[in-house]
Image 1 (cartoon, rainbow, N blue to C red):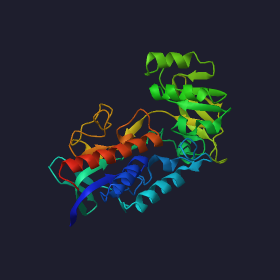
Image 2 (image 1 turned 90 degrees about the vertical axis):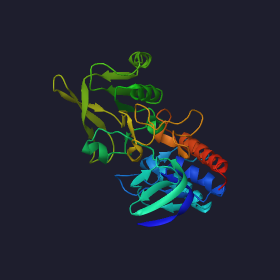
Image 3 (image 1 turned 90 degrees about the horizontal axis):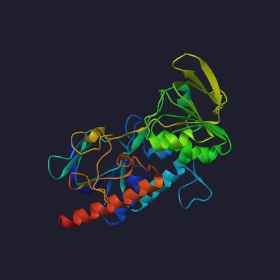
Image 4 (image 1 turned 120 degrees about the vertical axis):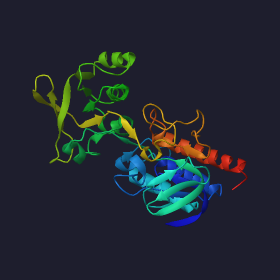
Amino acid sequence: MSESNVRNLVIIGSGPAGLTAAIYAARANLKPLLIEGFSAGGLIPGGQLMFTTDVENYPGFPEKITGQELMQRFRDQAAHQGTEIVTADVTKVELTGGHPFKVWVEDTLYLTKAVVIATGARANYLGLESEEKLKNKGVSACAVCDGALFRGQDVVVVGGGDTAMEEASYLSGLCSSVTLVHRRDEFRASKAMVQRVVENPKIKILYSHVVEEVLDVKADMVTGVRVKNVKTGDSHLVPAAAMFVAIGHTPMTDLFVGQLETHPNGYLKTVPGSTRTNIPGVFAAGDVQDWNYRQAVTAAGTGCMAALDAERWLAQQGGH
């Protein structure tokens, strides 16, 4: 077990939140260490934007930019400002044993005065082979990110909660029609949101249906969705240019269970108006603590907040 000196700040995660925190922390001369992740089973370097093809809503890029290129620019900027980046997964953290905090990256132990958690959240998918093969080719988990690519076309939304209602309503303003597929015969979303969807003439609702297959893998693009009525067993094809999956997200909090307070839905709790968690010196930014907005620009904003919060906290502890 090799052990390094105590760091000022370790940042876990390398999406917009983690990398923005790194940029600000490096500029404040905190000499941050960023653990960016490595494996598909752990954190994805670059975060969820790595699964997005064209980003058209990030300020400053009128000509649009790919998610991968945008995150590479974030990473280059963090490194240029002086961030040390490790491409590996954090395997364990100890945040409750007093200072310094302990962060293990495989067999290497890092000691740090402060931690920014920016591990993000992953979208839940249906688990179909055809869905996996058509991700970013018409299969998406973010209508705000990708809806405009299918302007004037027919699309499908899968889900029955508030997110599904929001996605369907949003897409109805862009697309010629929206078919909402829900496995139960009633929605679990709030009444007001359900009413808005039910009354929208551009949204067709298929209750008690599940998606069997997304077409067409051979064409390498979405051409339709085969759905099955769970009550009758009958299947039929819904022609569509895209399928938006809105069955929730899972925050990447496994490392912190039992150490940090979470909301009932599993997201990390932060003090309103800040990125502070229940442990002084530990801060959370981005989608791991935000299930409401989940946009690159809002994640980047909270990453900035986390770096400033960490810098101020370290100064109060006697400088850095």
